[in-house]
Length: 305
Length: 302
Image (cartoon, rainbow over all chains, first blue to last red; front, side, top):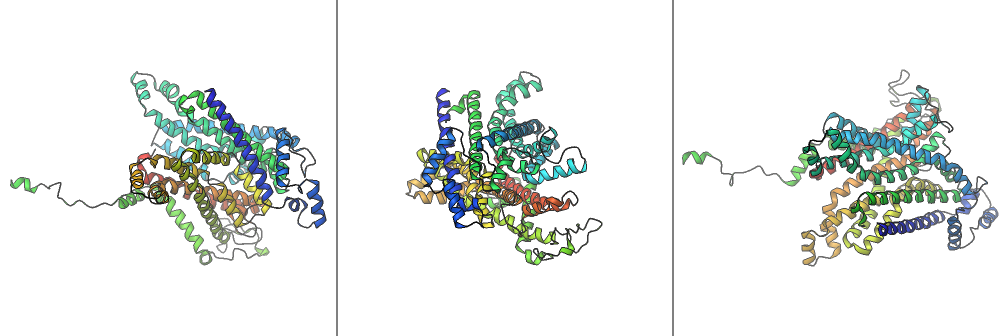
């Protein structure tokens, strides 16, 4: 187990480093940053001044090493637009996004797992079909459009919730539903299929043959094993949701990391963009690492690779 | 003796000949999801192909005197503009029909590019195994840990959003699922006897991949292609909605929702109609993909 854990952690560090390389060069190679920052109508002298001011006249390798070295100490430089350290900006916004991500994942799990279990128990009945229909629609709905529809229904017509902004818990209700619905279908399908597999296995038949109560068989024996793969998927979905938060936070004017990323992207504030890309990737890498270790602890067969 | 001769001899009786293709066709016809998806997607493809003939108006023609006319089911609507008009007086139905071209083109081409990249990587990893597999798996993990929406937005913002850029960015970002699925599918058949047989008669690696492996993982490939096509269509709509995808005045459905956003409180149909169009298209593609999976591998159905 220790061996597996150490190897897995080493891989996670390498992946994080590769992502840092990718995100740095992707942004530097996809256009002339100095021109992008200065704006299209500025003069050659102004562009040159910006190039020197932000160190963009240095060789790209030098720029990268310098950026990475500072990034290891959580120093991502100054924002071009916000007149503040990137790290300070991110620290101020991180709480909102983590709350949103955590609550959305909780919401998705709370709906998806019972629905998946129910669909598996009542296989091929109307319950199963309703669950499947929900998951198919959930998958096909553009999340930004779903968010706007929620605003129309709950904020404009029913006036139950505020349209946008942050501050009270009411501001989180619609963003959580919008973001959670995005992650729900995959979790539901996996729970359902895992449950179906487990229910047809020998040890469940044995448990039933022993005369155990249906509830005991389902929840003590079947669900525990069916839910193991869901741990891994939930980690992956959390990563996707953090990426998706950029859309949802923009629509609901929630001042989190996604909103910050959006503002930074639309203003070519690339130190912020780079830092957010790296941070979200690192969160994803960390969460999937934890899920892998958790899985390995729960199920020794997972330690092989 | 005379009685037994009346019994049909099971060995010589002419059974109706059913080829595997016919059996596949019958299963497809009997699969409601597959048929519904295929019919709706087919209809949308036809709409897109014959857009100039079917659109009642020019999708780009502005007329400020006809701004924000409600659709026909509203009391103030008229049959002249079935889905009403937008803030510049452009006919919504015509823009919707032309918008199908953008969605289908981006979905199709992005899925094609990512399919080529992902399949090449996945098959190589699955076939060669060892170090090649380790390197490619590492690449897949790295790609998966980068947030797609964020990277796509950042690149589109630096390069400038356009149809071509959106296709390329999505094509180069969405190959991960192709690689994951083809890698596992190739591993599963890597040691099958027909692969060994092909190697014994001296077939080249290229030949084995093209004529033995690819045909056998084709169904998995089609399923992933539909998923990624749907994914790309939704991402294009998201990018265009945020103003970094297809630029105006193109009738992208995501852009139509963005343009209608400021009017949605009083005229909700401006966002409902293009949203429903997106939902229907993506739903049809997903149903088709699920159907292909069920029809080609009924033993895996759950």
